[in-house]
Structures are given as structure tokens and as C-alpha cells.
Amino acid sequence: MAKTTITAEPGVPTVVVTREFDAPPDLLFRAHVDPDLLVRWLGPRRLTMAIDHLEVRHGGTWRYTHRDAEGNEYGFHGVYHGTPSVDGITQTFEFEGMPGHVSLEKATFEERDGRTLLRQVAVYQSVEDRDGMIASGMEAGVRDSMDRLNELVAAMVPVG
Amino acid sequence: MAKTTITAEPGVPTVVVTREFDAPPDLLFRAHVDPDLLVRWLGPRRLTMAIDHLEVRHGGTWRYTHRDAEGNEYGFHGVYHGTPSVDGITQTFEFEGMPGHVSLEKATFEERDGRTLLRQVAVYQSVEDRDGMIASGMEAGVRDSMDRLNELVAAMVPVG
Image (cartoon, rainbow over all chains, first blue to last red; front, side, top):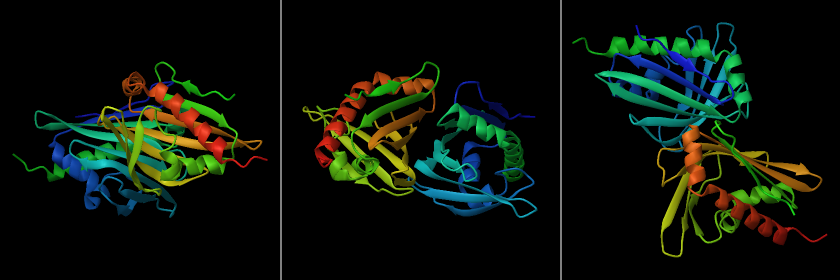
């Protein structure tokens, strides 16, 4: 089974996430920009996602929240740079629990014999910012998200 | 006289520019968001700047060009993350001569006894991207810009 890799080298303000999926790039892309699909995979399983708005265009803004069983809410927002497409999605990202610590994320969808390698590169303003995001529990959230995305696209791909 | 410092450490995809100005933070901020002021200092002296659009708000997009005496044009565009203010300006940045190589920039204006420390942090998706921008002649452009900004605000500050 495909595994999620998360790379965060010491001294560099970057996190790289990769995961291979048994689904075509356009389906992976759609799962990133269709709000009805996005809420089904993004974030830890124990949290419920709600999308405030998601304007999928150059300069479009987005905001969503994750809520736990106790009602605690965690907000995130950002802006798209360039028109999101299957060639890539570039956006800013800010966790409202750490205001002012903005990162830049790029997701690409590379076809590999009918499968797709999803690659997410996030760069932070400093290594401290990057380490702060990791300390906030990012890794478990990413692994859950990738597993949930895998389940979602597996359920959507026509059986050949 | 104040000097511009440009720091680009090996192995880290970051460029930090600092410069102190004999002017208050709000004037420095205005010089970044008022198109009539911005065209008077941003870029190398030998190029003429023209602003296509500059939407100074969260999700607002901007684009400008620099043109040389031979009519060659260099385009740049990006998006604001958060509402630009004297507390800081965060934006994406893309040189259209190197499409797809987007960076994230944050400018801050710190008051120091009536003077202002301008600090610009730019992070790139990779060290290669960062080095590519430096190789494209970024340093001379930054030094010219900071000197021109210094001249502009010096001409605008009331003599006490």
C-alpha cells in the first residue's frame, strides 16, 4: 500500500509531503477544489470540517474550520496565486491559532502509469515557523488527510 | 548613511533585505501601496515601471512591468495575503520571466526612534528558485530600489 512521506529537513523552512494514489490526476485535483469533496478528506478524522468560502481563482480567498467533539474550532485561511488547475495549485496558508505565520504551498499532480503522485511543498517564513507548525500536530493531520483522500478517490474511481 | 543589507544564506531558500530610513513607518508603508509613490522607487533606475493594477486588500491582485530603453518588458504579479497595513504586507510574487516559481514576501516597518527599519523576507519553493532569482540580477535591483526609496521619503519628510 502507498505510504505518505513527510520530509522536514533541519535548518530549512520547508515541509514536503508526497503520496501516490491509484486514481488519475484530474480526480485528485477535483478533490482539492470541489468543496463537497474537500470536506470529506482534509484534516484529522476526529475533526469536522466546514468551508466558509472557497473561491477557486487567481486572487480567490478561502477559509475553513475544523471543529472537535467539544466544540473547539480551528480556523485556516489563504489566497490562491494563479488559477488552480491539474497543473498545480499554489496558495498561501495561515493557521488562525498562530496568526501572522503565513506559508506558501504548492500541490502538483503527476501522472505515473495511470496513478498519481501528489506532491505538496510548503515553505515558511522561518525554520521556527515551520517547526511551530510541526509541533502543533501537523504530521498526524497530514497522515490522516492522505489516508482519507486515498479512501475517497478509491471509492470514486470506476472499477475496470 | 544607512546601507542596504541583503542576506542569502547557502542551503536556505530565503532572502532577507533590511534598510533603515529617516522617515516614519506610515510613510514607508504608503510608499508601498500608493501607486503614484510606488512607481517612483521600485526597481532598477534604468527601467521604467508601469502598474497594471494594485488592489490593496486581502486577496487583491497586483501586476506591474519594468521596461528598458529598448522596449523590453519584464512583468511581475502576485496576490496580497491579509490586509496590507503599517503592521506588515504579505504577498506572493512571481517574475513572469520565470513562470511557476512563486515566492512569498513579507515586509515590515519597525519604528526606531523616529526612523524606520524596513525588513523584507522572501521565501522561495526551493534553494534553486532562490538562486535563480539572484542570478537574474535581483541584487542590483534591490539596492537601486532601496536607494530610490530613501530619496523619495527624504523628499517627503517635513524638515523639522
